[in-house]
Structure formats: structure tokens, C-alpha cells
Length: 491
Image (cartoon, rainbow, N blue to C red; front, top):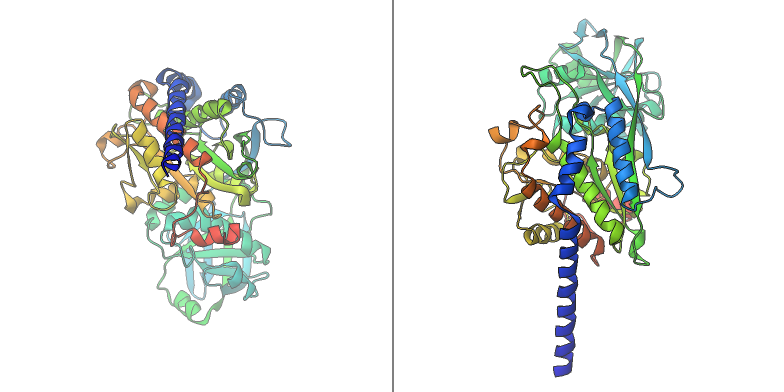
């Protein structure tokens, strides 16, 4: 018995020694000076806010790919470079939109909002298709007709999610079933109608579809007799008239590099470490400074990704890692949407998305995990933060649905456990909004001692997860658990 105890103690001591070596290695690899150098380049005035589609964001992409190459990552097998082309389109608001049902005429902005799909003059039957799921369309004959659906899905709780995730998928399903147009009735909370008007009445970007889009609209909740009757009978006739210009192609790219795992079995499980590298560009505003540098949002996250690539380039983990810097987050999570629909690594082999994105920080004693209590990696991230002097805290503003407003969402909806580790936020207060999407968000305003702690915590968290025996999982009962079971076959 004494011999067994001695062996156990030796193994424990050896494990502790190994962990200390890893921590010291991270301290040596990740330092404030190098983080500041990366940040200074990415968030300089010369980068003009890294707006999606701008020449400057291409410079940022080239910088990131060069660093990934220096750090020892490789292009995804079969690719000749570190870029994934992302097909984007600029949508021009419709100049005129109207829908006539019976004696009622519904017009642009007051009642209707154009999403995409171009011009049309159509006099056709209207068919109600519930939430417009694949099953709903299977049960309805919508060929050549105007499909009318409720915005979102039975599981959707707010208009933001409906706009960013449900509507694009619904438009594709409607087109596949031959619908001539799709109208979604917006009943969900989360975005007042006027906020939707403000958003959809301006030029915006979307990911290009693999098939031609059909005309697609939102409709305000209406008490008009024609709509009340339609909702009861599920059928009517409508005259739809849209005048709109064709979308304008916009070039975009994600940046991707890989480190292969060392374990014969676990190397087939992949962790995607992600961060968006775009920001909002140059804007007219009240201050003399019109450049929105985006040091906090999201140069900090991009540099966290680079620091992780540097460390793992010299210390490959058991699991394989894809480092993915995505474009177009500020335009609606577009780069990660494109990746989730055109993955470089099979989604079924991807066991975690470890994202780094935030609005800034107002508490230097903590890091913020937006998705606390949703996956099984919380313990690893708590330990990683504790080691480097930070406390891990959860979502400071659940009412804002922050989890579904960053790139981790596009992995989660596919079923992949996804977490977002961000700098420390206690509340959305004046200190935070002093810098969030403001020209003042420059590198000179950052506390580099805190950024060093955060970056080291981020890298150590990735190390613990990538070397753990257990693969990450959704917590039982989570909103995305069923999608995970579908993706992984219930395992």
C-alpha cells in the first residue's frame, strides 16, 4: 500500500511540475510588449478602422497570415495560402415596395421592409407556411406563389436572432421550394419596428447565396381586415411590387492556419480558435477624429488568436487547432456565417469554437465568459484566469443577448459547443461606451498589464481544453444541445 501511495504522489508531483512548466512557457511566450506591437499595427490610423471590403482590411489580413506563417501554422490541407475567400454582397435598399391584399395597401417602411432578392411585379396567391421551416414548406405548395411566414422559429426568442440567422436560411428554403417571394411577419421582441426600418433602409452587406435569392420582405404586425382574414384562412391573393437594384459583389476573406495535434486519436478532434479582425471603418461624427480604430473591438481578440498561434506553434497540443480570423462580424457575423456553411474542417470533427470578442473592459480584475454555464469547459477557463490573476465572471447583461451577437453563434447553431472569452465587463456603463465603437478606442488607451494577463489566460485556457481527456460538450438542456446531438450523432 505504501508503494502505491508513493507512486500516486510521484505522479501528482510530476503533473504539477509539468503544469508549472507550461505556465512559465506561456509567460515567456505571451508578453505585453509583443501584444502592444500587434495591436499598434492593427489599430493604427493608417488601417482606417479595418472596414469590411476596404483596402485596409486586406492589409490586416496579409499581416495576420504572415504572423501565422511565422508562428509555424500551415494552410489547411489542399489550400495554397492562408485565405478563405468569402463572397459578400452589398444590398441596396429598394426604391419602392408595396403589397396590395384585398382593399388594403401596405407600403415601404410603414408596413414593409425589403431584405433582398431584387425587383418583382407579381400578382399571385399567398400561402401561409407557419414559421417557414423545411417541414412547413414540405407541407405547402408554394411554387410560383407568395409564401408568408412568421419571423423566427418556434425556438427563437428575439428579432435579432431572426434577422441574423433564421431569415437567411428561411429565404433559401423558400427558393428551393419554388416560392416566387417570401414575406415574414415580425411579431418577435428585441428590435422595435423603427430599429428594423433604420437598419434595413441603409446599404448593408450579406453573404452571397449559392442560389439566386427570391424577393424577401419583413411585414409589420397588422390588424388590417385583409391580413386578419388571411391568418384565419391561410390563403389569399396579393399584388407585390418591388423596385430594387441588384446586389453589388464585395470581396472578403477569412484567414486560417492549422496546428496538427500530437495525440494519435485526439488529433482528429479540432478546436477552432476564432476572432473577428474587422471593425467599422471611418465615420462622420461630432469629434474631429473620424477613424474608429477598434483596438478593443476586436484587435484585442485578434492578437489573442495570434498569441495562441505563437505558443502552440512551439507547443503543439493533443487536439488539432484551426486559427480562424474572420471578416464581416460588424456587418452581421458574415465571415463566420460563411465559414459555418463552407467549413475548412468538417463540422462533425470540430468539437469547440473558442472565440475572443468583446466590447472592451471596465474591470481589470476579471475576464468575462459570455456563455457561462452552457458548456463543459467552464472549469478550464476558470483555472486559466485564476493562474494569471483574474477572476472569471459570466454575462454582465443577459437581457442584451450578447451570446447571439458574436461569431460563436454561427458555430452554436450548427451544434458545435462555442464559448466567447472577453475582457472584463461588470456592466454596460459610461466607461465602456466611452470606447465602444468610438474613435477613442485606440491602443494608447489600453492598460497593457491587464491585456497581458488576459492574453495569457486566453492561451492557457486553450491549452487546457486542447489537452483535456474529455471533449467539450453542451450542458444538458442548453438551447443548442439538440443541434449538437444531430451533428455528432447523439454522442
